Length: 273
Image 1 (cartoon, rainbow, N blue to C red):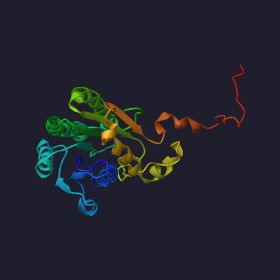
Image 2: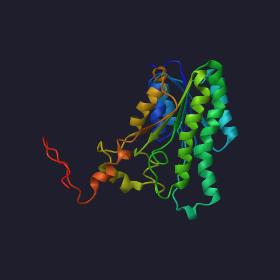
Image 3: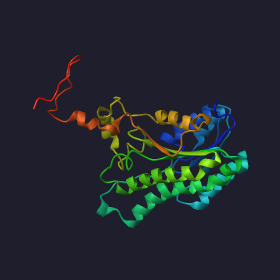
């Protein structure tokens, strides 16, 4: 119960990583204010209330400043304080640069990058007044450590979140507020299985490119967030933490056709020329 009496705002909580985070924070003792957008939070609300926690849900479009401000105001009105912000909600699309219209660029960046900023801006005054806060944003390995053809706009938005984290962490460091990002790699969600991402077949086949041997589950990410949301993480700020089973450290090189296999145990192969 390391988060007992804490209040967490979690966006994107009706599915995928956001849903797993909301459930984990509730199991750690936190009360929740969550967003609904594409689907209902009814199941999540039943499960969280069964844990003995309180939960508030609101229809929220991250592209709307008024929606975001109303969410934060409702959380403060209901709970009196906000201790944790987990910004997970976002969107995704796929297209070559020459096919990405201004509207498509603006829609994604407005949701993923500007929507994140709207949330941070809305919760900061309350966190500063109480002298405590844990802000956890969602980046991605795309735009941080790898590129991805067809997702220039997505990579730009997620890279912007990493930059936001560093600047914001410095700005609020003396206020008792830490700011970090999670940068997930291949995690099995409806988003990654959609046609705007890897799709069903590629998601199933992706495990062979991940050093740990499997695609992650949302709960794997939620465990990291649980730590970042706690008092114990007080000395960690301004970081974007990759959680991808080792994918981004170069595992694809292990599958090059014709590559020499590693030497057998007990032997070292030296360069001979």
